[in-house]
Image (cartoon, rainbow, N blue to C red; front, top):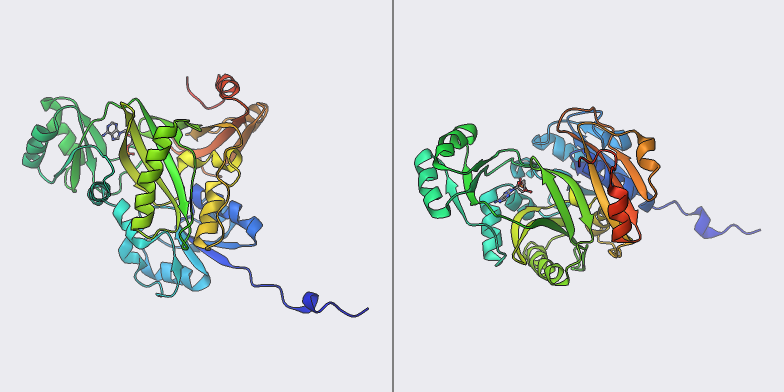
Length: 374
Ligand code: AMP
């Protein structure tokens, strides 16, 4: 038998993706990327971080330019799973190395002021705001915004950290003292009817896909429950229009998320995240192609996957403690995700996704769902 020449040629080199940050988002990116024949290396300060449990790890701080350059040298494409990587720490990445989503999008999301300016520039409605650097600034800002208002740190705020609700003049001083000393922003408090998010993906050749809106319920500023699809054709179309503007503005590649408040049938943009998002975890089982796989496809400039839903989904975050795996899995349509983290109060340790054929079935199976407070 003559040997098949194709079988003699060396196997194509497996591409390696470098991820700055090895949290649960990085872990789920790697898990989605392995079927595509990829390898993953993370940069994180902890050897037992969720991503490090499923890929290679370079130990180091996320603001260490040398460590980031070391990671860059080992991989074909770089991405990140946290949005607080300081832009200055990316300076030693060689120019030819692919880095997505773009640095400009990362930078815009790191300061609430630049984020607000982006929304304004792209004509995306957002809450009224004023910058605050001193107590007199705050007194002036509250005149313009009115009560109630939310005082937020401009940088490093997430999951409700670094913010204070101000309901009356008596609360001005304590809010400023709690947060002051860093640049702040005072924002109008929106009496929203609900919170939703839209996740979109774009590849470098400009193809775009949008997931259905997800309705998100928070408590203490932390996401507890997402329900999707949030079926509202008008809001879906409007949200897609807004995200398209952002994607095109940055010549974006990868997944982008925007969180909105819904009030009187209108969308008010709250925050952008230039990455996969907690409110899209349900897409792993609830959509033909998950946000994680589509992010990987996008940064490799591969064709994007179908974002149609498979049914009606709920995502329940497990905060502080994990329920017993068997208690979740005995519910038909439920899937269990454990990020491999040490339990700590207020810490996101895992989630479950519940996928059902109908919304009615979904809501009924969510009753008494483990880990979901009433
Ligand atoms: P953030 O860190 O800005 O995403 O805020 C966390 C959560 O706090 C949001 O998901 C809202 O539930 C609430 N929140 C933040 N800003 C406002 C606002 N301007 N009006 C009403 N609620 C807000």
